[in-house]
Length: 264
Image (cartoon, rainbow, N blue to C red; front, side, top):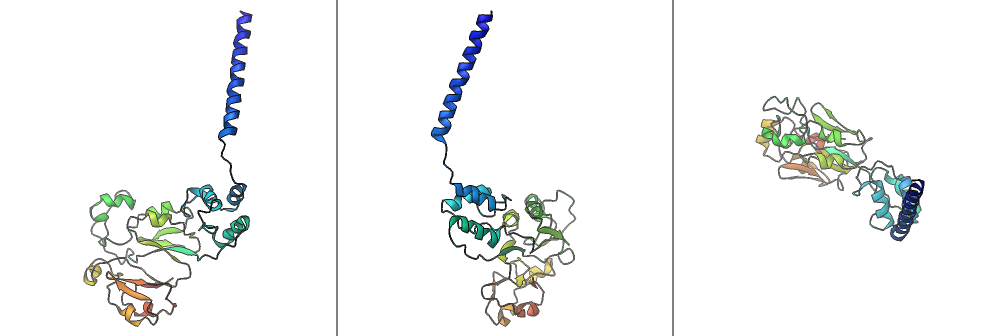
């Protein structure tokens, strides 16, 4: 009996040693060499893992930078300061990137946007695609106001105010989560320094726009005709500002009869 127990222990121990040997051999044989710079870069990245850089988290971006697939200033959250630190690790000069922020192209507040009916269901913008008319608002182009973008933002930079989403420029890190989440596709990334923005996305004709919202672009072209920098044009019945040409003079803001071009 005792002899059998000893034999069993020896067999189990020997089996463990053999398995351990093979595991150790396999780990050395198949281990993936990691560039030490990846760990250094990962140490200076914010660690939000928001995906705003276009890679699966901060570790994915660190690997992409080291392998030359991404620039050192790719992180939108860290901005220029983090870009400079990553550049120092990689031994290159980080170019000064333009800071971007999200902007919601809608001015249809509770007071200005008309409703077709009262809605009391699930408050989720994405779910509105299954609701008649994409929700209660008469405008099919504007903000639905149920906060899917708010839930998606990892920086608490966007909130529903008076029925529409509003972005806090100072808190926004331009990760793009709200842009990709919005089913209406009315959130875009714009330069932080931009001073004039068009707060409407309705592409219908002026008469139809006024029927559903008191704060919609009616494609009157007054902004376009009066802009001294040729920075604003009406395309598909909606005004668009070329921020590379805009000088911030404010003429379009004062000339817009519907007050849908805002100073931001």
